Length: 254
Image (cartoon, rainbow, N blue to C red; front, side, top):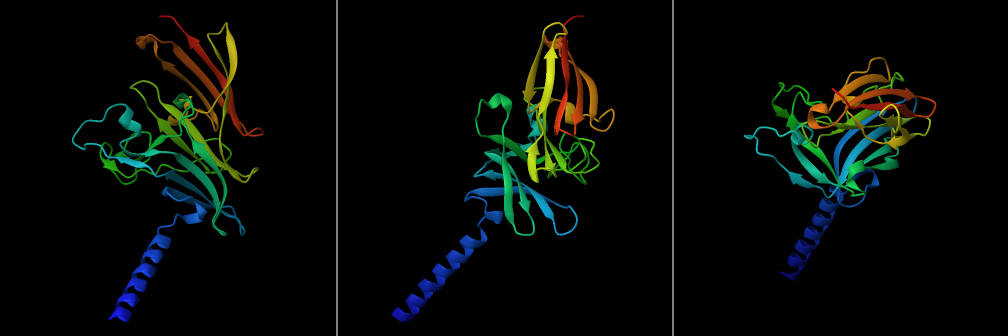
């Protein structure tokens, strides 16, 4: 009887260990990592890479599907909240090459971001095979050629805090660095008289709009009805420095 009981305990322990091993995050990601999405791409030859979007112990925030969307929900829907990361991995050796945090500039360093797991089609995030206005699972890392270099190695993130204003950011693969990077914006901003230079990592609306030419945007956002200004953006990609450059002019008037 004791032998049978001991064998049963050993089998249970082995089963628990095996279950824990199967739950271990891939690519050597830390304990508590939850992979949200993975997008592999082939660079030719034996060089294989993948972008992995993951979070650290995120909390799940489902929305009431019967309620109408608020403006912030246009980029959130039902979402995960927590520390968010994007990693470039070697898909052959299954090792992480580098990892970036995903944070908002207004967050004052708070390590937290919202990523939708279910959202309505027709908004900023791509939802395949779903009728516009109905909910489905988004492809957050919808790889496209945003910078105009001819390669579909970038994806955009979107963050709406109100009914006007849509913050956008761009992440992607840098062949030069063999790493994932967040593309910065080096812009000159001001009212046309007083100007200042700044570096941003999020820019209003840019990646939610079609470019005027590959890697180039020219557009206006009118905040005057809300006590703001008419913002005139001119943005272009600088491939030699792997960054976006341009100007934002704030026009206050009728």
